[in-house]
Image (spheres, rainbow, N blue to C red):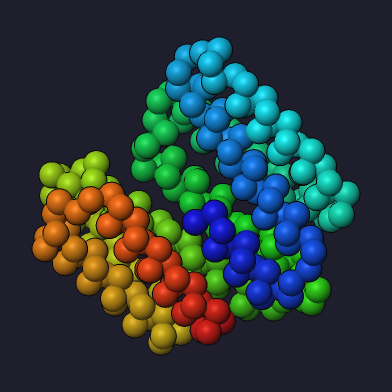
Length: 226
């Protein structure tokens, strides 16, 4: 989820050296965000302060360099600041694993698609960038109930029903973007229904491996379709 959106944006916009700086800044920024979340959830314990300071300082330095190279990115600042604030509030309230916070995290990650596209060597068509962003967001949002139905909430049938219903509903808009994406949507819906029923006690490692394969399939389909 962290890597795919900026990679897709880079492909759509035309690769530039600035994409490397964006990706590094984004990943280090995520480490700072994760450390800050741990610090807030722990009641601001001293043991978590050093990672927050170290990763935070590195992220700010990289962000400053990125803004020097691409000052136009400042227009995204209010959006990402609002998403960051919402997620940190969730950590402060120990609601970091809530559905709404997962949605905020997915939204922030998927917005890296248009951000990366804008850093490219060409002028990407809005008719490609935003559909790609929407498809990735639809997919990654679907992973929230799907993974919960396999791990944290695997004994709650309501989560399984929500996961299956979401994936079924999403098939239609995916098919409207491109028939290939509709086929992928059907496969994802089948996975959401069959895997928790057929293999209800999958290990996290196996679930993660399956997510990697699904993500690669979705990414390839997006790049072909748009």
